[in-house]
Image (cartoon, rainbow, N blue to C red):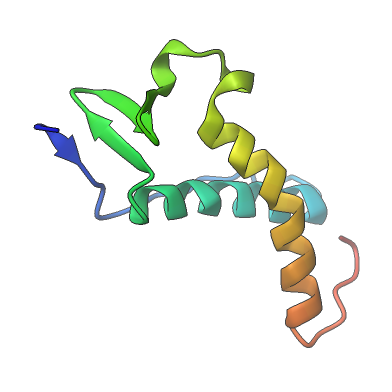
Length: 92
């Protein structure tokens, strides 16, 4: 498709006053979106975000497939991180 763009830099802003677990889950959620841009499943075409060929701008937030993917995987990635980190994580 003509006009497709892939970001080269990413800026994630998180509220610093979230509890540790919500902070970690939110960070992982946003990193899933970064992954979507990097692997090309999320693209920008003429100002519209396109996820796997679907214009997500036309859908309600809870129906947007890139958000569904991020919500479904954030907990799994948190557990993987906690198990693979070699440290005991408390407060999460």
